Image (cartoon, rainbow, N blue to C red; front, top):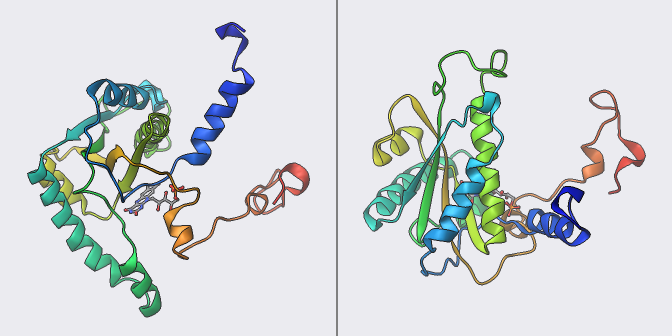
Length: 226
Ligand SMILES: Cc1cc2c(cc1C)N(C[C@H](O)[C@H](O)[C@H](O)COP(=O)(O)O)c1[nH]c(=O)[nH]c(=O)c1N2
């Protein structure tokens, strides 16, 4: 089979396996460094993401230093205390038992940002939906997450930090939006199910309940099972 013939069954299986076995990882990072060539491939996957008007609005801030990690962890701790207080009593107790970041343990942190005005105010495809540049950056994050899984690297997205703290700690200019802070590193074992599912926080929904035909709310019927 040549490249032009499309994906072989094995290649296709590998892609679906990568999607199914990607996890949000926030514990048990090994301290082993991530080789530069591996990180470069993962960043290349991010940069290969689709983007509105081919804007490529992202930057990637690679963080190794313990001092920066400590500052980010302190920011997480502040935000996480505020977050816990937002849930009802029983839920708050469960929330406080969850491990929701691996900022200090991960050998690398990666902040993915979005420069919204990279190509001026009028962008092909963003004219009627202003958020498309942010969504494009999220596409880069997902590419990174999947490529990292294929490299056997765990990735955890930490969003329990204020944007103001991210701007201040990472020196991000005011006009650039921090979109994702990712904890990245090797782990020994990828779980088969999400941490939050195993902790009893929330279960996976049935796909069949989420697929509609023609109009929102009209159940999809035979298209997908369970
Ligand atoms: C935009 C966004 C933001 C966050 C997350 C995800 C996404 C997409 N997730 C991870 C989230 O909990 C996880 O993806 C789901 O629980 C499903 O698990 P798997 O990713 O399939 O392992 C996440 N997890 C966590 O422990 N702390 C966090 O701050 C966040 N923030």
